[in-house]
Length: 428
Image: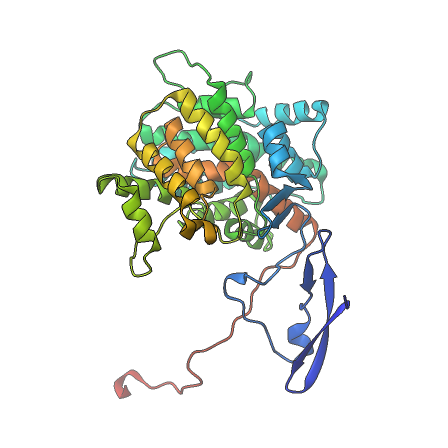
């Protein structure tokens, strides 16, 4: 393969370097395009063909259904690792030994107390507030309690900021849910591991002894691992572009939370449950709605099937389907909504229309089922997604700042009015 790409415009030829990644991905480096061609740019709505950065964090091949964090397959990590190990891997580049992992967890726990004044901000929100809005606001508000900017050149300063947000974010997540449910706020238990503590903070009832369900903890641990990072998606790109202005870590994370909120991104798992509830309200006939999904003239959209990046089965969905089946069997839940979900899943995996188009259930479909089975409110689903994606956002922000990437500033092609002289108001 040539190490140059040639672009010809109006008889003029321009050469640009070809860059090859470690997984043999090929990119044309066009950062000099505008200056070399005297103002010519590319147009790529949605950035489907545009690489915004070079990154060593996550490799994704949608055609082959491959997802790897720092070279480790998502299948092996979900089977053999715990979420805290994956957090360390994503942020620092290597799996920790036991000594490093224990120290990392101890440092996170040392930052798990949230300033009591943050409760006053939480109290100001009505119970009707969407949890994602609350989470974004509280994460941004942490900047007020830690106003000094992170010295990205200092390993100690960077490490302290990372362990601070990893300690406080799960507390804020649990408070967001408990506030909406009218329950007292919890700080958890230092004797538990990272995910066990998250579960206890969310679900501990004030009037009875708390008992941990290991199958539930394992299912959530896997789900958080699967959500850990996903290359340059909407929220991750938002975190990087916000941080490229040298905005601090906490406010950059808050911008990512807001981007994740949308139903085309993290809000998709909430949209799945809302769809299932609508099907139930209509009578629960899954065959009817599968037919509607195949009808191009019908506005109904089947949520939780297919994926923009994966053109085959979402590898995360294969893993979490097993955890979902195990959890539902353990809890013995009788829920018509979950019955409808299983019915849709069965039909989609057997219907030639969906099989030929590879419209398989994705991770949003199964995560919604798991969260409902756990007793997590529907409008908290995207908050749980944010909890899993937190280490990926941190890793991406850290990489972007350490690489000294320039401030993000896309161009545009102007298609508005040409010059018009101003007309005074009484002459219009």
